[in-house]
Image 1 (cartoon, rainbow, N blue to C red):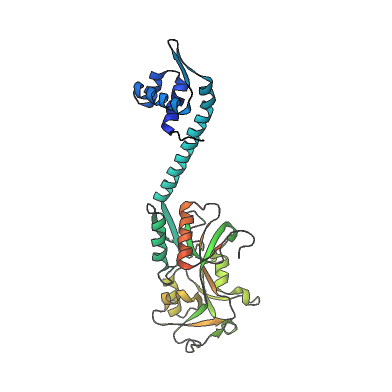
Image 2 (image 1 turned 135 degrees about the vertical axis):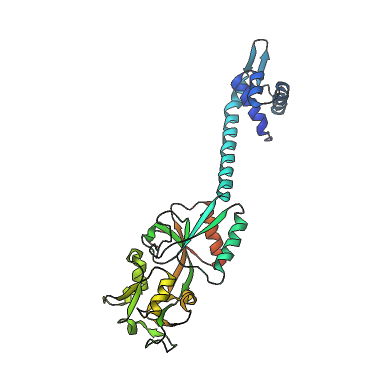
Length: 310
């Protein structure tokens, strides 16, 4: 039947076995020589075998001691690795997670709900929010400044990232008050918008710029660009100035419906997808904990990176 042996007793045994001198081993362990001798004797009684020969010539390992030594070292090495793993996990929970975003997630108190769940799972971790310009559709993931980010799909180089879809919302079109299509509240066909000037994201936004211009349903007709916008404020000002119309997610409509702007649902285009994303090669403990908190708060599902990712 296996017996329980304290790690301390194994450390004492290994120190004496390596020094072959009780006094030097005691100094190495910062304990008294009598205490060390007492613990080694207790280990020998527990094992039912002498581990050392002690005589006037010195100290030597017995055959039983020789047999135990490599296993004792293995146990102590394993425990050291285990302790270091725990320390790394503790350090990870004490560190900072940077959450990037270019538009506030809003959506029914999503951020506070995620924060409370994340803080419960990682009480020592700090969350820092990073606001990123619309010039970067990855909200800081691409340059490494954000650990996770709330983004709109599709992302540039999307195969580099895992993501979970937080919200799928209809795309609306926003007009300045007085626009010929602004008076009607019913859905508008996208075909009726083809000749309108559109507000566009910066060219650096890549596929996301094309998505919000709905280039996939224009049958090859290039969009008319009335102005480029890189923030909610610029979008609102450009709308009020009559520089163009703009597609936006239903959840973002309150951000620009500040007076002077009307919105309508659009038929003939796919819904928008808002997601939490992170680099697929850097999913450490804090990222996994934040993604889990987000999944719980939003009822979202993880979509892995790779050829099959949408």
